[in-house]
Image (tube, rainbow, N blue to C red; front, top):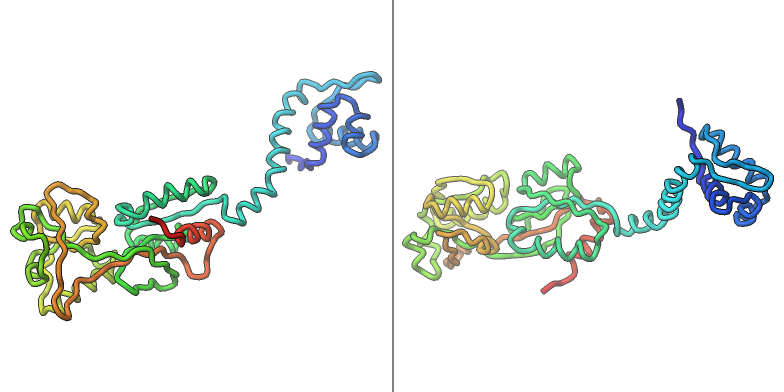
Length: 304
């Protein structure tokens, strides 16, 4: 059995009769004559296969079916009336969904405050967060599973097919076990650390920064002694605390206060600088949804 399509006009006429309980007054309220209104209610009853009103020459009464139906019709008309405003709000990015991926280091500094402030300013935008490494974000972009991502990379890195906006730059620090002999120094020279076993992320998840770190070793005529690879910065720091080696980490990771780990700045030597890393907001080139545009505008506003 096919479900009939009922125009909103018929529902509005039903509500007028139900509230007035008088076809003449309802017709006047609707700025129409009584016969077309009577025909419209008859048409609605035919479509519903339900009697809505009991009529006599002197009175009109709703049936039990009409009384039960009336609250749902009120809700339907209210939602229909709200649609134009919702459409305008969606076009302006005030309602909708933004799927944002982020690397773990963003969770140490930028992201918590951003999420709080953005949700306060745009409460009707559904912000969906996904922690993902850079390689996972690229795959998610290919599947259209995310709208934007926060990536860590070496300066100037531009992922193919993505636009980016720089949001932070920070130096790399050396994380080492607090019982390590080098931890007794407040700062270190590059030559002090190049021979130390290294805990590092796999190249596939952060190739530009991986290559920059290796280039620093090669420029000093050294080869990194990779003792262990791990994907998440928290895991890398945990392995450092266990004494497996030292690790180059963004300065923001210092906020991950893992017992047994010390963080030290390392001074490069002439021609051999310690790399810095950048964090960027990235999104598909030429693809900016209204909600993403709102987020880009939000990110562009300076904050303390």
